[in-house]
Length: 170
Image (tube, rainbow, N blue to C red; front, side):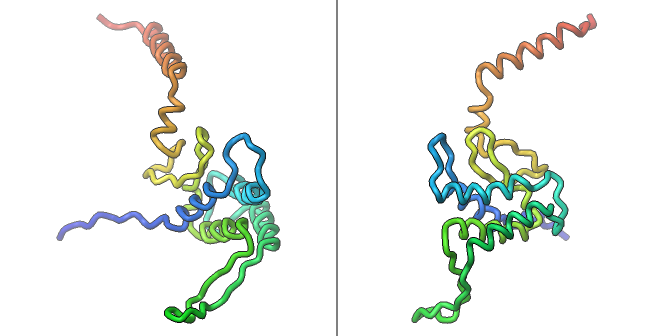
């Protein structure tokens, strides 16, 4: 019998969260707008998650902060009353922060939430799809920007020093 390849589980909810965070959060040195400041509060929740996270055992400060923001950003549940599609369950959000908070709420139910990371180079959020979950940057372009000429030069001198310290057998 032929063995089937294991298909990776979908990261759709995590992708949705990352898309919304990157769309609304302030990135550069410009002063954050009111919307950006509200979304920044949602980002803080992700930053508070510990590196080793047990499923359904969120730290108290994460739960408290999420619940505090959720009280300020209510959602509306209703059934659509359109002519073609009637009765479709729909969620309406009261603000942009509520949209991002709703995406976070869905992503927190995913055991792979720790795959959502922030790139230290460009400050964008990304989903780490590597098998060992050790990606540091969002793309190869950010890795190239990080791996600058000075960093490469210092790496070369470090390697030369190590080989000079070792005796080479003849």
